Length: 75
Image (cartoon, rainbow, N blue to C red; front, side, top):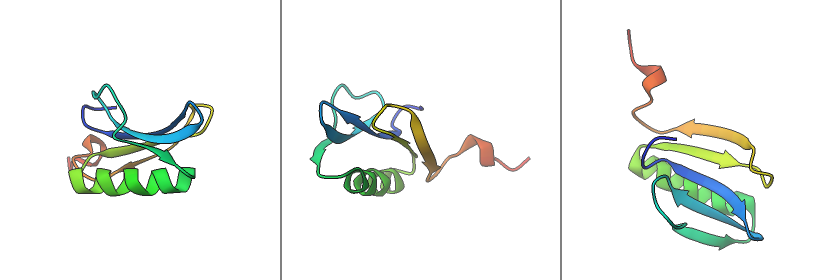
């Protein structure tokens, strides 16, 4: 993940969101994964960064880019 990207993940019995490079989660205690994903998505869209969504086991379930995606640079 690039600096500033948003990650939604499960840790210590709760869903959380964290900005890459930050020491702590900026959002935690969501009741469901869907709630955490919605907040993570909105934050990633507002900041124009990538949103990485992980399953409870830590495996990446999906990625969405909301700006500055190097894979979409016209050639």
